[in-house]
Image (tube, rainbow, N blue to C red; front, side, top):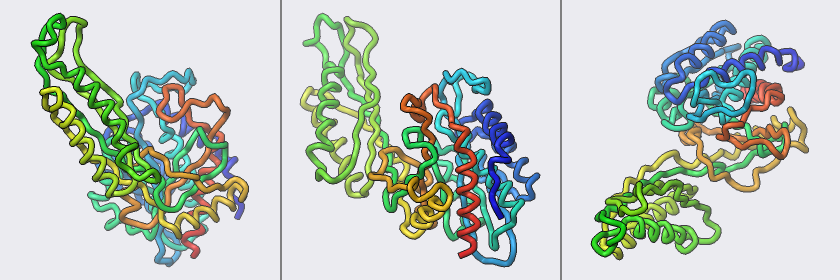
Length: 386
């Protein structure tokens, strides 16, 4: 049976634009989840709501096969004020789908419809619509709610659109594909006073600046050159007036890594450097270090399977190995830690001027919808046919 995805484009585009107009943040995707659930029920799926608070799983069985597959799409938006100017722009000020999760959800809904119509598989399909990928680790929350106990999956798969990659081309990678992410808040505790008499104070801005410069050596002078890691100070807050030395200075860090030993070393060195630099200025620091998502690590057999399916859908010349892992993070890592699977990228670039993900002018490229739908249908049917 030939997959005629293009025949469904008007419906797919309408769904994507509806989702784009009605963005919801992580664990608040109440209307989004219900919209998706109603679509799936109408297709004949058994829908289970409320996993990970606002997540849902749609199950479809056919034949007598014992194999099962899970395919995941994320549903949450971001706290960004939209600047696309699209006629279907966000109707909620300050919120928008700036990462393309509206497109991910649409592609999986499109695949759901075709899979239900074709019934060209033998086994069980679990479609996982996940909340809170951007912030609260919705994948972990769904797992804690019994995702894989209630919906056994022999393997799980997910994709992400990428406007920096050529349109319609697919990038796969065995092993680490995205980094672990940690965050750290460093507060320098000083002694404030008049800016005209700094000798009477303990200036946390000076100590904070010294800490920031010292942090630049965490990666460059502590890790082996072939080990990948990032330590970035993304915010530095202190004071309100030119003639007042404040009591405190605060900085916010993001830390990215792949290897568990490297991750431990980064945390240790950040503590040591911050405390040492502050002490050298006669001050102390308070560190709030929080470990976030684990590294996203693809399994070999499932990644090779994706490669073969992708070549069937877009042609071998449009399937590539991702040359290196990306330093972004992804909570699909938790699902890959529980079940074999693979996470891959679908290029959506329109031109060299495309805004990146998480940009107020980013808008998912609707032209790629049929490719994503086709990929999921081909993958699900082929996996269950093994």
